[in-house]
Length: 186
Image 1 (cartoon, rainbow, N blue to C red):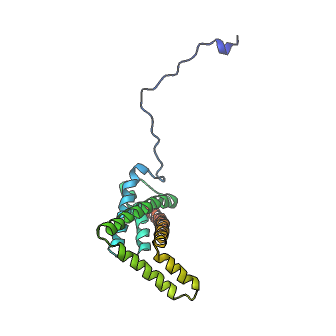
Image 2 (image 1 turned 180 degrees about the vertical axis):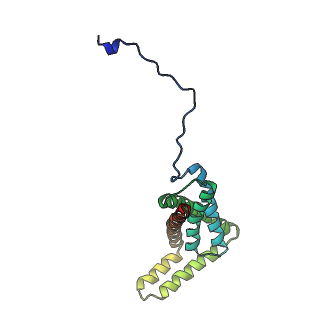
Image 3 (image 1 turned 90 degrees about the vertical axis):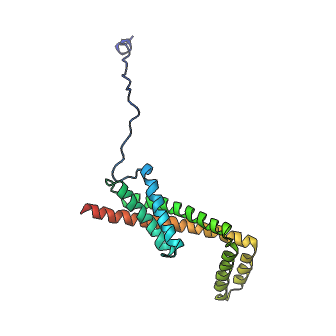
């Protein structure tokens, strides 16, 4: 029998401590502390949109930038990169889209603004079609007047709004992180 196998097995001491946590670097996001700033950034953007103090694009940029600013204020040692700011902004944008969708759904259901919304959509489509000499534009208008056309338009509108919220909020988050990083470097 070889000498290595003849030796008694060594016992490894077992630690009585709990699991060790790895601390995040100052440039990464602590997601457990990032949700509240992302929500606050989204809420400010929603207020700007609903009160018409800012356009959709400006408010979406603000959602991302404010999420980064709020995160930075809550975590003074954080020095987020533009990429981390973009991720935080994207989360804020997704939350903003969800909150805004609920606000509009509430307004449509409770305040009975569905017919008004449908009419505004049809007016916008009709105006766009009237500027076109294409015969297919009239067919599109007729399709959008149907319940199926309205459903398709709503789904496409929601998808495009979600994508816009995430992209613009990501850009705002990246810009906010870059500006804060430059400020902290001074």
